[in-house]
Length: 96
Image (cartoon, rainbow, N blue to C red; front, side):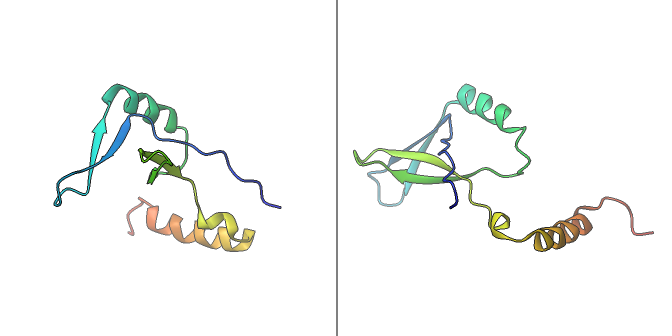
């Protein structure tokens, strides 16, 4: 049985609904909190942090980090093949 990962929440980003029709959502940024959060995440090998904006039961919006990785469901040979392909595209050596 697969264990459920602990939920992680983004720090320093705050979301609120808009009362204007042409604005979908308002996002507030606490620069210091976000900088500390991102500095902690630098150890994470993923290049991106994906955030799902969700609505709590009380109606408040919040950001949860989406940790889904389709590679987690692949077998070891499939992962190796993907890593080999990614290495080709990420290779900085000149072709000549």
